[in-house]
Length: 132
Image 1 (cartoon, rainbow, N blue to C red):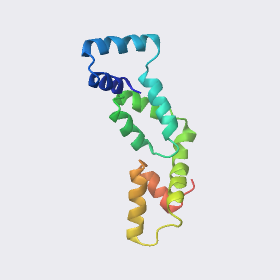
Image 2: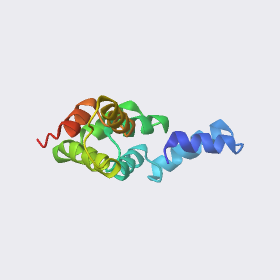
Image 3: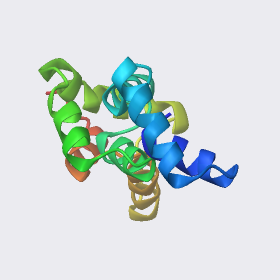
Image 4: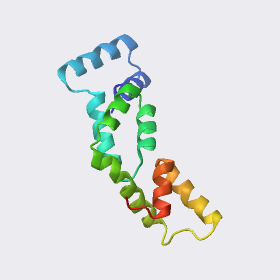
């Protein structure tokens, strides 16, 4: 859970803002709370089925700083970035039995992959059957 999520939850339960901030500062000092660790774990858990766009959006919704998100996503090893096409292909094949045969079907496949957070370049490569 991110610092922002904990702040919201504790405030909702009636905590005083100053007391919440002091408590969470102490947790960070003791190493019990870390947005970096949370974001890294979230990325590791979700990158098999979601694209970088969706992961980044979900982390922003949870109050993780954009700079931290960009840094962690940039530090994915080259294999993981290249592997996004393979992950997208696996997600796509699980949903659809065959390649689209009409423009309407293709649009449906594109919307599905875009909804999973894959980039337009990745989607084009998957639907074109590009294995590079």
